[in-house]
Amino acid sequence: MGAPIKLVAGNSNRALAEAVATYLKIPMTKCSVRRFADMEVFVEIQENVRGQDVFVLQSTSFPANDHLMELLIIIDALRRSSARRITAVMPYFGYARQDRRASGRTPISAKLVANMITQAGADRVLTLDLHAGQIQGFFDIPTDNLFSAPLMARDIMDRMDTSNCMVVSPDVGGVVRARALAKRIDAPLAIVDKRRERPGESEVMNIIGDVDGRSCILVDDIVDSGGTLCNAAEALLAKGAKEVYAYITHGVLSGGAVARISSSKLKELVLTDTIMPTEAVKVAQNIRVVSVANLLGEAIARTATEESVSSLFD
Image (cartoon, rainbow, N blue to C red; front, side, top):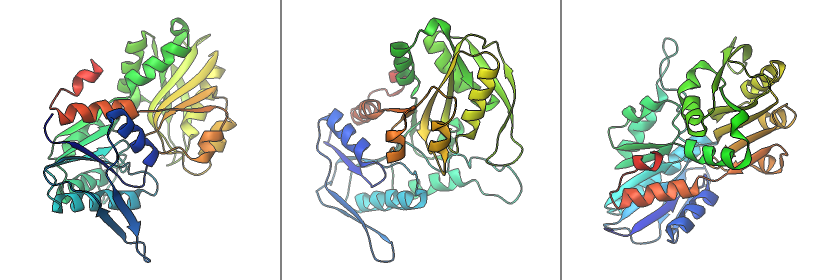
């Protein structure tokens, strides 16, 4: 291994950062990230990082703009402290849903955020289950997009009889992601044909595939309001599904999402900890969290030693 690894974390997900540090068997780098009275972000790196390989772990989750500014300012502080290489480790990449112009006179904010991270001084990016794969191309620096599918597949095989499972994509756009998981657990695939009348509302129209008597597993990258998942679960049960589970990478869970899911017909929602779980998530009866700390830790270790990261998913 070359220079020692340093792991720095902002305030978005300290628990995950500490779990990654435990996996890597290194201490967290001392770093103060605080606010002035007007909520300006101030960062002070309290250890020597000159010539070292530094990984900054920060999800740009709620409050997205605060956490994004923390990330940018930490990167700038490290660059000015002569770090040899800076990797932005973003378990959840916020703004990813603004990856194209859906109508006239709108931004492509995912590209803007990619530019900001690059300009701040990041040398590479490590992220997990990007909302759209093409966002890797928005960065002009090396970008590794990790996948949670192996982790989820292992969890499903440990807990369920996969011979009676059916993986379901909650919309046509998520078919590639759902197919990848279905292939790993050797299960068939169904699709929910959903028509959205207006933003934030979803209306389930049709189920493509025979789900009768099956344990259905909904797979997606983000759960926000939870409306799509709850509607899909109802539609699947109406078509004869035995029970419905959901495996989602990023639990954005805005507004009353946790209450909606708790009172829904979903048997269980399984999330990863890319976004720090709230107290409401922790106490919800039908929500369970699995950790991506070991996956991120292994990816960081391989990046530091210039080994293949993609071979993690073979």
